[in-house]
Image (cartoon, rainbow, N blue to C red):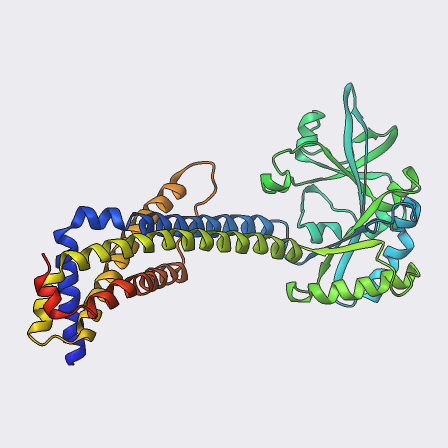
Length: 412
């Protein structure tokens, strides 16, 4: 009880001293104010950016996996693209070899001219897909029907078109059974696929005509297509299992010897998320470095002003010692004053940082609506401020505690 009462009285004395020299105290804590405001606003902005990016990743699916050809680093003279390309035979055996996979589809892309009547569109992207593409990409058909296994097995010349293509080719709102020319071949439209709203960060703002044809039909048009595979795991928690199963299968069918690098890549959305989180963590560590430098600079200022304070109050210290104050009490008084000064600077810095966060959230175009100062950042800032006051206030406090009362009372 005595200790708490002593600390309370000491804090009141410290606040009185700070108030008596408030301008000097404010200037002294400027480094701490700037450091804390900078670090909490940077961390909040990083959190807002992280939330924005993760939300965008969620729009393309959390359990999707991509398998694609990849040239091993430094081996360009060893492999040709024919050796690297994924073949249909490899795709057909993948689902059975990877039980964690729910479904997959090979994807081939090429560009061609699309014509309906006198409307001609050049360099239109034509994509060969299998029926499971609809479930993997969550792209439903708004008019007509989706692809079926009969379309794939029969290599039928049927196609899907998106609503953007319907408008560009001036087709009816229900274009099913309409025949168009795709790369010089006649294709019957069987459905209109919705244009998925993907984030602009993935190119989703470049919506244009899209034509989809059965994959087997595409193979007839491009016998050796450059393709990749989009797959869907049975759950987001199984992506690592999928990577291991697909890697084992692909190395076996490609006869890759132990020690040789993979000639393919297997990536999941969680890999990209992990990469982004590493970048976000780096930014937060960088922010912590800024606050550390600012606090050291601020701490030096605190130490200087406390030394000045000890010099100015030498007679006061001598008087207190003369009436029986112990050196530990004098030391505690100056330490508490230094810590209080740092904590007040930290509080002002937190208030300014919160104001900057409100500003960032309100600025249009920054997409930082989720910016928020996490609790751990506040705790860390307060802890750093207290530690700064403790470390840099120790030397002036020890100097005050060791003053000789007689010499101190003689001080002019």
